[in-house]
Length: 413
Image (cartoon, rainbow, N blue to C red):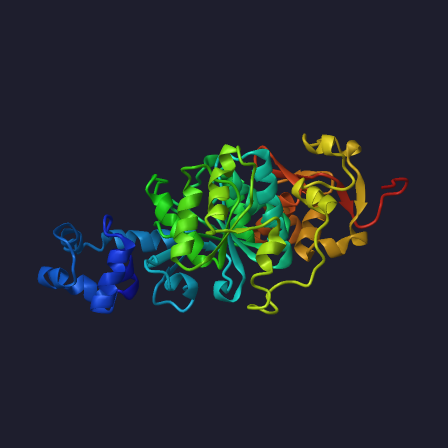
């Protein structure tokens, strides 16, 4: 039995809470010792009869299946003993024994990580606040941590992606399970620019009980958690309570006194449990002195810039035209790419030049540019997030404007 299989075996004792697993590890020292123990030892460790029954199932078939699936799907596994496991998360009372990851790795403990949570059925005000918050946090160099649910979670993540920042999305299902289903591309965007994280193994469905316990990871990874909008009985308030229990800061946007979706956030402020904020700067100012050099020395975004970025618009294309992709090259503006190359990476420039006035599949782009499929997909993801390309049927991509190295004769921008 490998050490990884022992960790996977312990973490899949369904019905044994994370706090119970931590109690066992504190008692026995290692997951291997937990695996090898007998019923009497489990009883001495304080395990109930029901939990002893779970621990007496010594089959490693599930652990071996999970390890094989993670290798097949390109997922990484972090256990509590791994050096890369975030120390902030390790210090909460009930950290997950195992984390599954897809995407980039970056040092969470050395970053200013801010959790953003809110209603799945937000108001336009909430959507604006969440989008602006994610954008401004990312623009300043903070890491945005959230779920990936409909509503404010997704709005904050999209804002952060459009701010060019790093994001972490904590899931209530397996990383290979897209929920909600219409967020397929948001999953891909987050994986390209940040990380998808779950304590649930591949294939785990989005069961209702997963999400409240998932929330402790969002707050555990964060220095502070921002509640954007929350009703009287909201999962957002659960996350705020968990953050307070974990000694994290809690922030909240105020709302109108009679607005149902502001009831929870207003209550948090009224009780002194959350600090009232109006913008990302109110959050970041709490950490600038404690984490010097972690934030970018950049000017504040103006309202016009925020609106332009959150609209994902090309400055040369009207908002009306952007709502519906333009498939006629004659109607698209020509842009000299070398005049604005500082706005694009080398890979993005290569993709835009290869697209020209055509619609191409990622495989065709890889063949045309000589770049790897992974680099093509990463560039396409970020270009799509920023509104420079859009996807058509059959996974074919088209540029919203025609990018060229030099303008064709007789053509002007």
